[in-house]
Image (cartoon, rainbow, N blue to C red; front, side, top):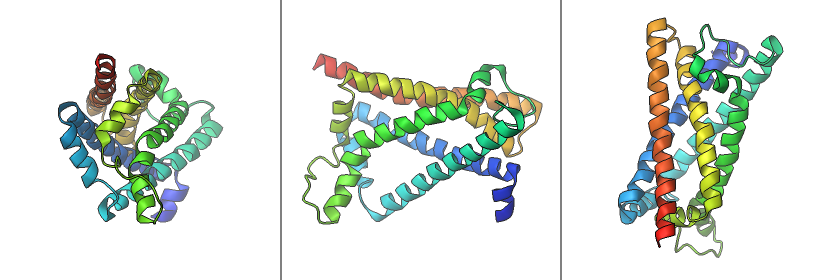
Length: 229
């Protein structure tokens, strides 16, 4: 089984599909968590405190990081493999929806944009929250007064119009990435019936739209609040 996953194109696509769906589940949780900040800063900070530098949060972070790394590595392997075999065709599929044609041809570029956005996001939030807690636990002399005040960090980040523009651009790239990735993952896992394929494609587009809409709403609302302050 391990050799199949490592050496088979189908096995690699299966790994890509599983890790991709896992990351979509994480994004769903993250979006729902962020929406809480729109209604109650106190409730959002309670969630941040619960997800601080404790064993279950650290285990979850490690698993999530591993999922990202595996997804990226296998994406690069498949991209190189498919380019050698078929030029610019990225994924071996029997039917490709016209509405995501552009996304399917630019998944690597979209992935690079999303990866750059992830680094920016980690700098704005993780580095100022959980990383500071870890440094404190290691004995470093750091200020921990704001490590669980996630609402404050959201407000500070999205009061800057440059950050707002960068995040919204990244969300657009993530939307395209998800609309293709969702149906491509399920197809790689065997859902290739023409009737269900079209339904899954539409469900994926709707799901990605709701997901990215939720993230974008938080950014826009906090930016508007900063203008009214």
